[in-house]
Length: 367
Image 1 (cartoon, rainbow, N blue to C red):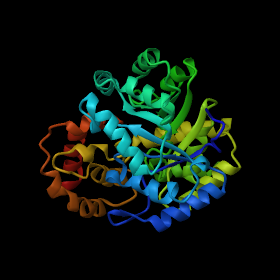
Image 2 (cartoon, one colour):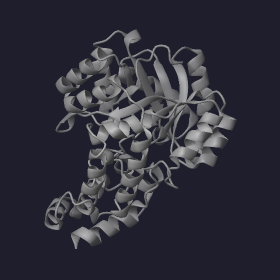
Image 3 (spheres, rainbow, N blue to C red):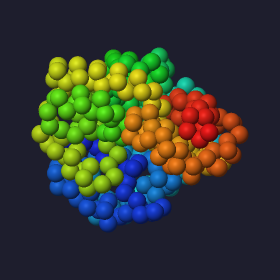
Image 4 (cartoon, one colour):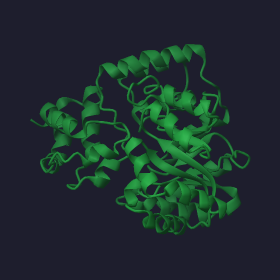
């Protein structure tokens, strides 16, 4: 499975450089070339990333510029893009076309949880995907997962042909009772599955730490905050790929440096992460990773992750209360359109009680 993959650094295509509402393809091309020339080749996308622009950008900037055998491409089957079995094959074929390829190296059942798993079973997607692999349109079947370890155990027991599991692993979520990073990792290892890591920097949270937490990492010596988080995720033995949502050449450069001379996390660093974790939890940030799955399904189109970002900057002392109030003002009118339907909460990988948190942020900042 791993013979054609170069290095542990994966290029996540959820947070690409943008010019307004369009992908900055000139910048993206530069980033891809830096990444490939450094000896890495794994790209990860999904149908809904960047409102559908991610797959097209992969087509124009990766598939159109590099030989197919020179890059690894992962895509995903998201349950919010199909309602019945007949929808699945047309969706898959459209993904191949949008990405400009004839096959996917990895195809993942996307963001599986208990509810999503039942929908996949109802729509027979597991059998459909197995047939697509038999036809050579998929090389490896995998899954990304957001639920408790017992649900992961059930899925891997019932679907033993799944070859790899994509998990949210970072030092903040390692022992989190909702995310259950360690417990899920242990289940995947029990079934002999290799691990792909998503959100190693938790949507940028661990690259922009509260001041006290940042000082703890500075004591360890050189290295960006992001590099420490990436090294943490890559230090687990069964992890073969760590995805980083890279949005600039600066991020590419930093991440390449982290992985080209990779050093596993040592005992002193592990202890420092324990301290940093406790500092972050004390400031009570909302655990949003800016995936924007919530906004995609919100009937009012509320920019939920933007609202949460203002709150998190305030509580971690990145901005003053006055600055937070000014920044929040641009979202407040839209926020008033929330009808508390909670559709957003069904798609949130972090299990955030979004409607409650939006109301709380409005009370803390807006009023």
